[in-house]
Length: 120
Length: 421
Image (cartoon, rainbow over all chains, first blue to last red):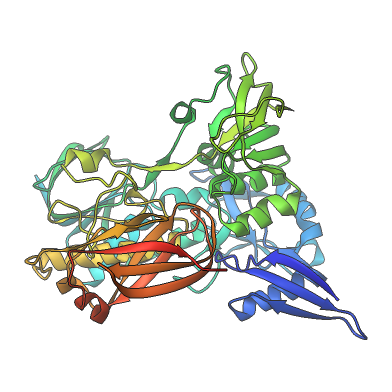
């Protein structure tokens, strides 16, 4: 039995939680301190496969700014963040772009897209 | 002279929400004045996610959050002027503004909503010793350069101040290939949201130096070295604890100040603690018919609360121009007791409270297992238990109308009580 303390980042409330790992037979996790079900999900995920949403920008031409903000359509594994940044570096867009437009389809084979977060 | 029912000063999240809500509540002739080249305010440079969980029940980035409001504003046909600077507002609600198309504009308004937001404290405001080398930016300026204009501001970075913008920029600079040597915080606790410490610092192994400050900046043209030291409980540097960082860039995230030059020119009373106008239950300032909302009133940590507060201001500005705001009786004051830094609103006129009223407040230190106690003289109105309270996290207390109607004194106090262990 092992206890890991963590702060939930599912929303800005930042619940202080404890995740208890129970290893007799098949591994189970008991999350306490969370105020909503998303906290439990986050706690288990942090112990098994931590993921993060990546937000960044890509180059854009024919727009009033030189960078277009983008994000991953879902959270990606933490250890893929810098690979994702490399992919974004290669992108060069031409305006106009609409919010929600897919900028990179199936990023790194993760079945997650990179989408525009504003129209420009 | 142009005439409008409601003039909203500032087209950021506060101004957008106030204008839309005013329109939805029956006001028609509304104008937003924005000094930037586009609407959306600071949200346009906050490309990270975490916005909208309360208002939209989903997690958005800053630009996405802004675009929803901008689309709604356009759908409602609300007018706005960009690249326009308001120079002066008066107590009788005249607005003087200037831009390159109309020249000098004089506008008469029945009501004004102040939504100018806040600005960052700079090096000059905190007197950091050392040379005046290049490479020192406020975190928000760096954020705008990187996220909108497309300029990287440095390679080896130190960040002073652990407010949210500093933490967000620590991650942002790291992702863009810079090395962030650390975040230095003079207080023994961070001023930012806990979730930002986790996902911006811990995720990237960026050290947080609590109870530390900068004691010297070296470099002639560009910064070359920054020296930090630990501070004692009086925030004085402790000899022998110095540590040096070879860096070319220093970001400052050392606080935000509500931008109230215009409020002052209209003779509006300012709360010395919040730095923003004293407001009542309707978000009306000390000058009748001038309302205020968002970071110009007090600095918020979540845009969702800015939206909520601004909707209230917009709705009441609309009620005011339609003569539906009641203003006869003497208001009840709210007073910050022990452990509480400030409360917004500062005045309550019960006649204008519908079902309940939210008091927004900040505490003055980090507390564990404490209670927020609302009192009318010695009588307890409400008690809220909190496991964790910090100055960086705004708290709210909802009081219902029945509770407020039982108040006999001239003021209600909110104070913090440590729970017995």
